[in-house]
Image 1 (cartoon, rainbow, N blue to C red):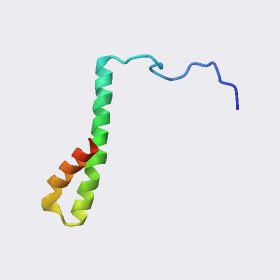
Image 2 (spheres, helix red, strand yellow):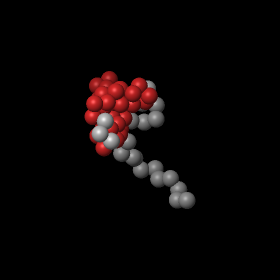
Image 3 (cartoon, rainbow, N blue to C red):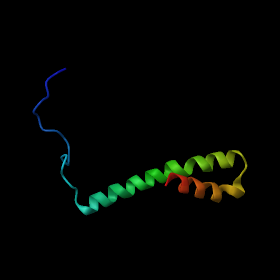
Image 4 (cartoon, rainbow, N blue to C red):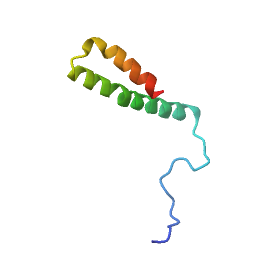
Length: 68
């Protein structure tokens, strides 16, 4: 294994640093939106493929509830 270099890294925050509230809020919002895409897309695709268009709101609600 090569020895660790002592050159500065491109990290914005260190291990124990805390970001300011606005960047933290934007990162949290991005995380929530990414989670919604992963939670809502499968019921939409599967429900549409199986012809369950009348039950799509129920399927999406159950996916959101099960995901926490």
